[in-house]
Length: 190
Ligand SMILES: C[S@@+](CC[C@H](N)C(=O)[O-])C[C@H]1O[C@@H](n2cnc3c(N)ncnc32)[C@H](O)[C@@H]1O
Image 1 (cartoon, rainbow, N blue to C red):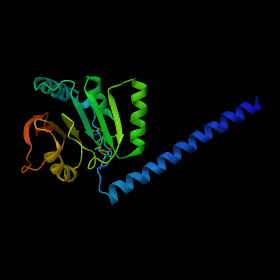
Image 2: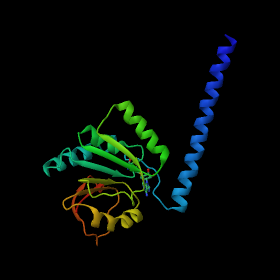
Image 3: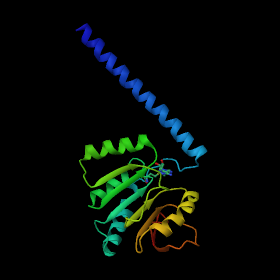
């Protein structure tokens, strides 16, 4: 009995230590990513808070004939938006730089048992976007600005870009076709 208790305690301590090391590595990664690389921090889109807006967006996409098409969240964090699109039968992708967030998103995918969602660890500036019909981003304005020429050059004509909170500069060669909520989602067409 004593030995079993000792083994359980040992496993528990190893688990806590592992978790602690992961949190420290994640912190270092985030600091490097945000301070040195000037990347956006991880702040999730709160789906529940914006459920009505999402319903409106899905209706709009359906009217454009884009139901079930290929979707990507650029900087997908824990994958909440990618899961929402997968739930609605889109072929959904999430691209994310942070290895810890990607691992957790993949774990949630397994738990949810969703097959039509994929997470890729990559830099959104390097990943080819030519295949996607709908692009979602929740990035800082400076990142949106930096991404703009890639979106303009790489996306197929008619592709839809949904930006959460932040607009693209007015000089952008993508057209603002709809604003959802009180300046919550800006929808553009390439
Ligand atoms: C504001 S969060 C949005 C998360 C998710 N899209 C959502 O709405 O719930 C921005 C995410 O972009 C990721 N990110 C920032 N720069 C990136 C880059 N160059 N390549 C891939 N992901 C990046 C961050 O790690 C962070 O998870």
